[in-house]
Image (cartoon, rainbow over all chains, first blue to last red; front, side, top):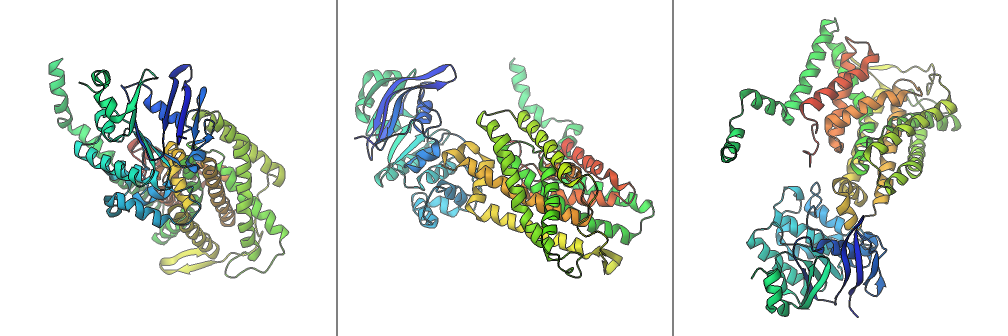
Length: 235
Length: 354
């Protein structure tokens, strides 16, 4: 059975319906991309999966349990973490305090050991562990945000546009780390504007447009699909 | 159209001398200097009214001590503002409740001899320790009845502020009802001799105790906020409530601990204020303006700023009493508040409009 299953979800804000009958799944240890134009509902889908928004119809099943009605902290407890696109670090807190907050729900007292593991992925963070996150560059902040989400050893990490606002070089660094993180265990569900790059490293992908599923397939299939290419990959 | 676009970048370099001066006036350093200047003017006015140097020095020392009491209230105010994002007008009543609560606890406990050189016995220290959790429980009850339903409905800031005003009136009426409207003393008629320091500065032993305790409580608060997981979670929630939720921080628990910390400090401040003067049902209300002024001078949401602001406000209130009726103390706090709001509303340590 898949780790995460979205079954016919319809969701939105107020009177506006943004997602219509979306179904998708993420298997254990998979990297799955959701691509699509601006306003397609990609971020809304992420928020619905993570409990920041509750579906009107359909359900979200994670690790065999229906989580559609749970609060985010209950979902974190079950092993799913989320890296928002913006405002994803505590700017007033230092790097190590940010990481510690990522493990707020940890039952055991092994914060230092957990932090060391994050510093292995991002050695730069260790050098800067006592610096306030607000004083760091966009790429470093993205590292702090990803590191905080990994502190609890999640089974699934949701990433909302990890490449947004970064230099091409930094995008390369971040994507390399995403691949490494995935090899170490957690499945990754990624929403990206930078569709080509993210499909290249994904096992599978979904194309979302106007709040509906349009295409799905392996990363390669979507990259080679002429229609997907013409509509969503810019060529 | 094209011309306007071309002109736009130049304009910022081409500011008039007046604009540049105004910008310089709005920096944090300028704000600090302006506040110091105000204190200096107060000092000179005092000396002009015939106060001697040692009298002025004594007033300054008392001002720092009053600042310690104000700081305990202002830290709570600034923390509640940071985490819950509304100005809590009922904070003064938590101060009053702390003072009266300790009076009742001390009356129940067997009275010991005064712990010389202080005017009070061990029972007041025990009462202080008991009144802090008692006032915390009241603050938690008010939150449960009043503020939590508003949070559930995502009410606007105005509603929260009005609700806290209502809570202030309710709590004050309850204080009148339980303890009456007379001025009360912890130890009526007991001597409270002053100790002489160099330069003819005279300070009562009780004042030293109050200040020492304020310093200890401030250090404990700092430790809590910087070194414990719940303290860091409070700062994280104040900084970015949405992300705190995403990281799995239970916001309601953070809010409860914020009330406990804020109310405990306010209660301790109330006991100390009652020891330094007397107990009145309005004592906390009269501290509300200085507490708000201290929190805003320091920068709302910043505990360090609240301490700095409280010392400045405390000194200003005491020094100004050399040339003004001390009843105008809150008015002096108000003057400093206006200076800050005009020059640099973010205060000395506040966040720059993030």
